[in-house]
Image 1: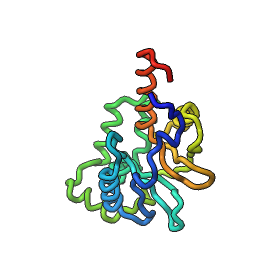
Image 2: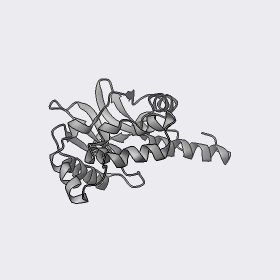
Image 3: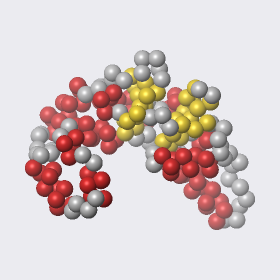
Image 4: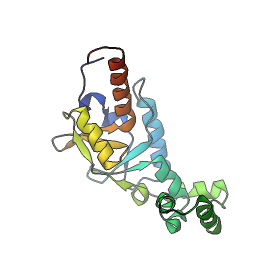
Length: 187
């Protein structure tokens, strides 16, 4: 196994990630994500989000696949956090009944898809400010991803964002280390 155990060795550089301006539409963001997939180095998992930048080029948010889908059905705001409702003890039948009463997903797919042309990413993005230094050890990255319960961290060098550390890349690196240890290799 390689000796690389630093965040900068596992991160995905910003040049390989989808970036969109805050005024981009959901369609623009999807197209940027699709283009970024083509630029990924061989062996890297597909990205599942786009980063949103403000007018000065600062990364201010992230739009993942779930945010895309939720934005297509704005009535979900009336339901609230379905996961929290479930954890609070409400049955899946009750939650399904609520969703049925609100007529969620009763529109045709074409009409729902039209929202993606007018919805701006700044309306649906999740603010992002969790970061980690590129020279940090991977054990710190594990701690931060678990602590923040996030799928990615911005990677910085000083005050400059240089990449993104995705859970999938960190997990793959850890998995390779686990296999190496199981096979008796030294790390």
